[in-house]
Length: 322
Ligand SMILES: Nc1ncnc2c1ncn2[C@@H]1O[C@H](COP(=O)(O)OP(=O)(O)OP(=O)(O)O)[C@@H](O)[C@H]1O
Ligand SMILES: [Mg+2]
Image (tube, rainbow, N blue to C red; front, side, top):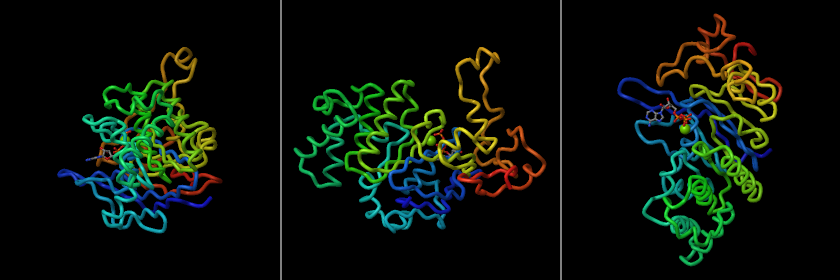
């Protein structure tokens, strides 16, 4: 599969007064044409820092390592001047932010804000861009899109606002969509509908997508490939069906076992959840960062950090496979 985005040795840290948070550490991957790649992991694992870094949207005290490279159409986005990158952001590569307020300004109508982006990037006239805004709102199945385009963000329900954010991200016909937990705040039925819309638009437009989630359960039948992050490191990556059905890393297995299933509560009296907590920012344990929580941990896991190794169609970072 030809790669549309090639990420090499991405590292991002936050330089705080008391310590440094290594939020993303040496993450490499290629995103294929028309591929849906999911980045999964618990809260604080570095998912948002990783995808914000791709478009150089990290603010101080955050800093992307100088040796990191993000290649798109033969250019390194991390070394590009701001004006060049601004022509790509929101046009060729667009983003649905984890925080909805990062997408919409409460003071303007949803349609006007989508139209504004179309004016800036595609040079459409006001009339053309307002018509196109209603069209993209209809594409994400917002009923009465013409009328809804004249609503302010607060007038839309959570699910409708999420659709409008997708419409905003898709307005300019991007090649790549970066979606950061776009369904976390929604109920399960609404989430499923949003995922259906995202997948349908991705296929219809021949786009590629990076979809960030803490919820592996969403990904079956949705993602082509999954990359699991822990404490900023890739712990496992591979084809979605392989990773979900035959996970290699004890962490991936624990994440999957933590998904509530019908009957589990009744049988065992309690839901399974992973013991312990994600290491606190800046206080990563020596050796494998997961060892304090891992039921398979051995002496070597406490001292040396395992390398990422290939195992059939997957990659895994665990001493069990070295
Ligand atoms: N602006 C910031 N300043 C300081 N530390 C930060 C900042 N942003 C993120 N971090 C730290 O970087 C690490 C990764 O954070 P990130 O937001 O990428 O996690 P995440 O996987 O997206 O989590 P969530 O599922 O909660 O969104 C965390 O330890 C976090 O505390
Ligand atoms: Mg996040």
